[in-house]
Length: 107
Image (cartoon, rainbow, N blue to C red; front, side, top):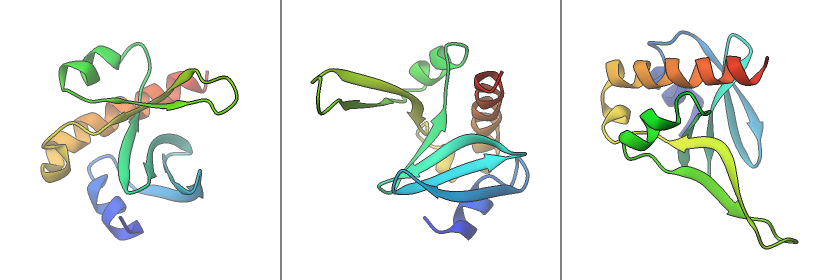
């Protein structure tokens, strides 16, 4: 996904900035990271407050297996709900939730 497509996708939230990170892109609103694009997949920031919403929408949490310890590590990012990529109003709702999770994480 290129920068223009990402900016268009989150236009309902406001102007976003995009920075390279983790071999992908970090997506920020007002200086707070709220989404990632990694290996072609878009993920939204989450926390305990918004986790039930993500789970209800069928989203999957980003996990990986730690190379040294062999344990599964859960990251605070979730896949985008089905349909949100095609519906700007729905994406704005999810982007706002992700942004609020980012704000809570920064405190």
